[in-house]
Length: 438
Image (cartoon, rainbow, N blue to C red):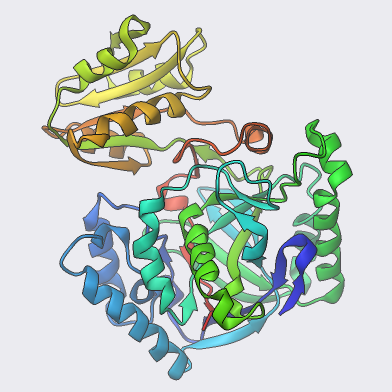
């Protein structure tokens, strides 16, 4: 690998499935999607069967805490080694330029390795590579357990750059026709189309490094964001897969004294995307509480007092529209249960974003286990379906403007966890590329 330590990147050696592999069966969606919809993963299992597939290399989080969890952990390690031994995977040198089409929208990305020595997910970090939202530490151990003995890593991590002039990816896009096409296929279950190209031209790689260097330049960074030298340059902001990258970091810190600084575990394979990509949209992440044991309305009134106001809605569409287009002072959050549909407005919110105000309340509410569990879901339809079941309740949140992301993180630090999603659930990253880490 070619390392560029000052930019926190490394030019990777990537493993792709061998010629003849059914790529629609090979590529599956990120493991942290559809966690409350096990039927989705049942359909994946039925479609994949015994075909080579990343489904056999991951632990979907829908299985966490279930009887099959231990078996899947063991089989994941075994299948990784089997695929390596049987040459199911072939090496590709250099970055891969990626195009993802969903519903006539195209997103562009680049597969690169990030240096975990330049990444810090703790709040207040000034590292070159940073989390954009709070890391839930108790979500790391199951992921760490898998990665600790895994021969391969499969990334669903999407990392953002703030490149309004499109200097990093667009020169590669312009040269796409001169690059070797590595894959080009439809993703399962109407999740779009994925294409990948090998970026092996030295001039393109040099241009890439030069463009990233200009984005990371401290003087230019301070001018761009109106901050002083006490703020370190933020080049890469983790958009999706924060807990996966935090897992890789935690494992690296655990093993580096034994394996040395040149070990492949020092790096993590990710997809780089530009926050200004026209095909990239930020979607809200809603909350669902399952099997409530305490009265939610009473808890909300106790928490917010006379600052909390409720207005009923006649339909889910009305609720979503009123939250999405709320312009009055204060914040608006939708609420749904089997007996209630409407919006709460708060005229004295405790955080700048509605998601922050709500999450702080939910953290306190869940501390004494007044609900069996909480899940973070995408899409109004899924929220209504789950929250309307007896004993459940859900909250509908507005989307965050993507143009605010970098400046907010630089000036205010990490956002509340699960603040935004890069696209809807089926637009999330699919596992396609692998990298050997043992």
